[in-house]
Length: 397
Image (cartoon, rainbow, N blue to C red):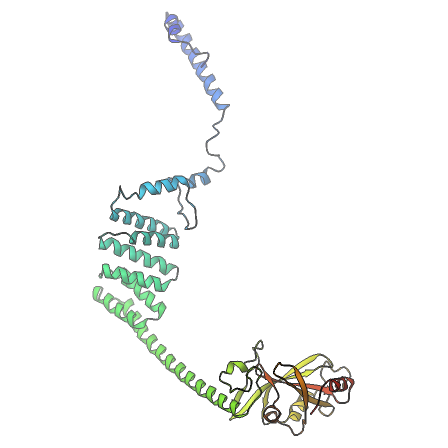
């Protein structure tokens, strides 16, 4: 303070009481001036008044939130952690307990994954306190349970029981996991163990009764599914036998026997039922093409013993929307299918006698190609320009 008096001045002026009063007043004025000068120079390194809460949260001593596993700790936090977990200043049991405390803090904050990391780090340490280890496994089981990791939760709970067999809380957790995992036998065993420690618990007795009932229902369902799968397998073999009897032309097989029904699956057409048996006869999905109008249609279930005429009669019972001239009918169309060489190139076509030819004849005798489980036939207006142009380009049988 520039205006403050020195000690020598003080001794020189303190001659009378009046002088002392004047000096005291002067000192007070000098102090006020000094304080006023401080107010004009704010402290730049301090916390901002508007954001002090957020800045305090970032300080490791004042934060109320745990770190996330993906967060990068600040150098201050990292340094404090190293000091806190220094193996030279802590026994392995003390270190394990600190990991447990951190895990519990994260668990209470709902940071279950972070809690799991803390417990697992502590359990890696070599310490001999079975009670502490059981607690950590129990807390690890609880963390996994809240994340619905029931298998991991059960494993941790079973480990806790190994170190502390009389641990009702952990046994109950293991029972809950077994119920979620449908491990009914182990669930009943754990219920019995729990009842030994806490006899007459009505909730556990009810859980055991429900578990036994659920086990019986599951076994019944397994038997039903096994029977269903057996029947499906018999049907599959019967279908394969019937298909191979007919010497069909399957695109992609090169005249080999059919061994896998997947080759007859109508790919990309999930709503279409593949070839199947009905009273010992094959029923096919059949595609119909109309090149003149660039449209197509499906006969979803074409019995191999039925003739084309019957299906076409039903298809043309009403005028198709695309038939603007109204010229397509069962009596005015011709039906063809193309034959292919080994390179899937059309070589010639076969005309189908719709009043006599069955689908079986077209597939087995004339060997209409079947691709993706669907025989395909083309329909033209008889005598029309499109049919003439088509027949000029191919050889017709």
